[in-house]
Image (spheres, rainbow, N blue to C red):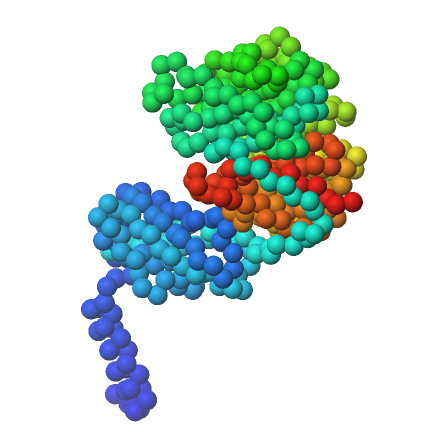
Length: 456
């Protein structure tokens, strides 16, 4: 007969107790939410270390209890209960020592069990700086400002605006005096035939053709583009609906008589003859990423060098295009770029500036080698390179700032950009024009154009 020591008897008792309690506990693999279709998202607008962030979900199971985790750390002490419509909203505080970047937040549901992952973007918290080194002049325009482009021939700034989601009925193309920042002329685009809700051919992207005295715009909601006269904003030609899928940016190479428009969501650029307004062969953009799709966003042109540049929203890539032949010369691997949205070129130093709203950074890239020279942690949406000062200006929509960066990747200024800075352009004379959106018609810091110039 085996003899048990006191310690052995105690261990056996503990084991039996654990086994007994385990039999009464809920199984680890309890009832799952079969057919679960829950979707989650995190508010990524100006979430900085020490601030609050919001995680939302929809199409969950009513009554589920939601716990949010970053790694092993629970972010909400008390679980959030999904409402009767299958939605939830949870607010969490981002720690003050959080490292900027894209953070995976696990959304764990119980009763029944399910899980999803939300990406929470934490932006760098850059204080305002360098204001005394720049001259800023601001003017109120109209609601829904989107982009601007300067015409040296007309000495005018052309600005687009569009308000709200479809059906978009409020949109204007503006001709603005670049000195006074006053509207010289404004028109509302024509209504779209047979469109529901009175939609107009709302204008978003804009580019100037000084050789033919025209302004080209993108009608993003109608998947097309249009041409207006610079002098009086009279309509020259409205292209049919569907000509350019989700048209975004449009740039004109007046020297070679070509117009390029980015078909965001597709894998190509649409091309037109600037004089005849005829469609030419599109430029297909092939991604170097396995199973990836090059989705073009912003465009920028080096007219003297005959090169066109674009960046991909879908892959971490930029493309260099020869405008004469229409051939893609190279595709550059950008590495740490997520959802690249803005691009600018320093032709003199052969450098590309890429703003990525997903990774919240600005990359400075050597075009010849494809090497990323600098990775600047300044929240980013769009970027313009100003050749007189040799500085890049970055609009940070969430932070409400315009960050100024030199060629060495150093932040030399972080300027107040008002509410939701959206786009920035330059005139080749040392001036940069930033346009922003608003929280509503009464927002005093929104719907403005701001001229920025470095003091000499």
